[in-house]
Length: 215
Image 1 (tube, rainbow, N blue to C red):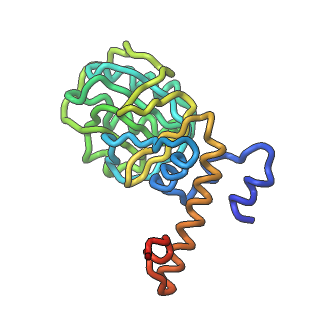
Image 2: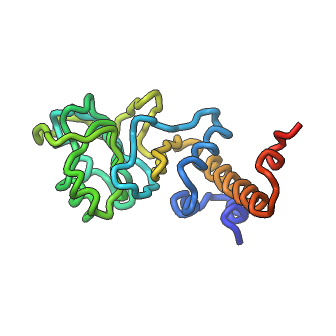
């Protein structure tokens, strides 16, 4: 049974993370747009080590001079969750090798930093997804003076605890928790539609013809 068929039959949606296996960030963004009119993309955040991540987010707001709040977020996150850190600047790193290895050991799915990370050489060797706005060699202090589980606004996108986030080589997309079920269904339809288009192109039909662009 296809994933989308299972969704139609269930009164309670399945785990969206499992259902979104094989769904890309562009596909989930297209799906979100079809449901809400918003794309959910934070353009300034890019993949650091080109690893895919999908899960619910735990949020943290901190000063760029305080990476101790990032450590507190690791303690607050459950296995399978994604830490989303909102920093107030990019001149100091709030994440690096030590935090990545600690989070990885705790089973956290990945981290997204609206700010800077560091230790890129180490992060490239770890099987732990990191997404960041920038990277620098220097860090602040472990003050732990920030806030956890607060709403963040990043490039005009609201990020809240419990939202679904999917990130891959194309970037990150945030899906509000209240529309997760609808967006997952729409994303599976997007994948099916794109697969049929690929089949048509491989069968010799032009893309303009498939899309109805020919006059």
